[in-house]
Image (tube, rainbow, N blue to C red; front, side, top):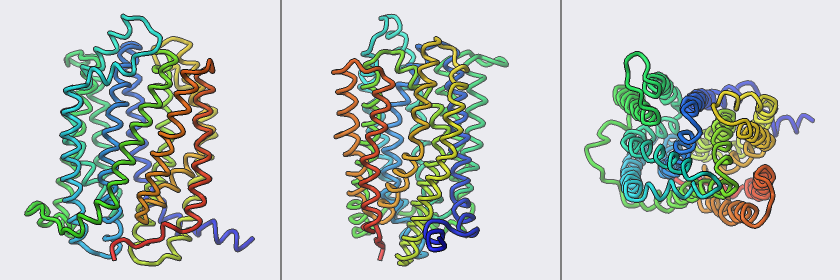
Amino acid sequence: MRKFREKYFGDADFYKMVFAVAIPIMIQNGITNFVNMLDNIMIGQIGTESMTGVSIVNQILFVYNLCIFGAVSGAGIFTAQYYGQKNTDGIRHTVRFKLLTVTAITALTVLLCVCMGQNLISFYLTGEGSAESIRASLLSGREYMFLMLTGLPFFMITQVYGSTLKECGQTLLPMKAGVVAICINLLFNYLLIYGKFGFPMLGVKGAAVATVLSRVIEMMIIVIATHKNTEKNAFVVGLYRSFAIPSDIVKRITIKGTPLLLNETLWSAGMATLAACYSLKGLHVVAALNISNTICNLFHISFIAMGEAVAIIIGQILGTGDMKRARETDTKIIVFAVLLCTCVAVVMFFTAPLFPDFYNTTEDIKQLAAKLIMISAIFVPQHALLNSLYFTLRSGGKTMLAFFFDSVFIWCVSVVLAFALAKLTSLPILWIYFLIQLADGIKAVIGLILVKKGVWLHNIVE
């Protein structure tokens, strides 16, 4: 019993260390998703078509967000291990690599959305629904998309600085900047969506303007604060004097980082395609999924933060070369993540019927959304396990394995299964949604085998 406890559970100092990393991430993500929920409810008060149009654009921009995440994460594996080595020059080179990569991704995204934005939105409007509803949803989506594009440059810079600080163990500044931005977003959502206190009533355009404004402020806070504290953030000294990066570092980051960038791109595109498969069951499904996803994201902060904690803590330990400690620490974090998220799942399941009532939509959409949330709750512990396994593989530079584990699975199993069930069967959306979540259990078994074998135990910055 004692050996079991020592293997799977840590002492008080261990959990203090984990919480020191995870709690600021949870707070930032929690407030972000809470405000996103309020934002979603505010837009939902305008009407179902506006909510549908905005949710479709957010699904498209979700692909961009995860491309940026993949780009900074690829270099971030090296940042965490360089930090474990106290190698400031190495950290500086990874930041430069991140800046160049996200600039290219953002330019391509803006070009794609400007040229093909309407076609991308229309891709989701193929299910059952009146021509008038489809036109209204398309118009709302177009208005929202083109304003949101102006905020992408500010978002990308924030992600570069925020990810680097987190990889260096500093999670408080990104949290504080995020909280301020969230408050600005919420305030101006209220003022500009509804036209309160003399402000113009802009509807969905007001929601986009508020988001862009909040991103500008968040970027200013995090960049200025980082550059003011050069003692703690030595990597910013001379950061912009040159963008020259040693060729061997570029080669290593590219080899390890490209699979991550491809993974996040293909995984997010896979999620967007899944949503399109579900939408084949009707526009009411798009609206219900929008509500469900918004609420679920509020609860999912638990396993997302624990996954990031794995990446940061295990990455730093691997940088020191202590493989035994890395394995022991990883096992304890994974067990803790699953237990924590099981408690979250119970709360989520029993509160699911409460949230859809805040939306100004039809009763059938509310009931469908509540049932989707309950199904999601059942699988939260599974998501916690999958997320922790993914970040474990990634922390040791096993990015190609992570690529197959994540995006190859979603395209070859989840998307194919969802399309077949939605197009070729008469199964209701709830059963289709349940079966897609259940299929992820295959991935969990594969991930457990890989992590147990220790294929991820590597120092990649030696």
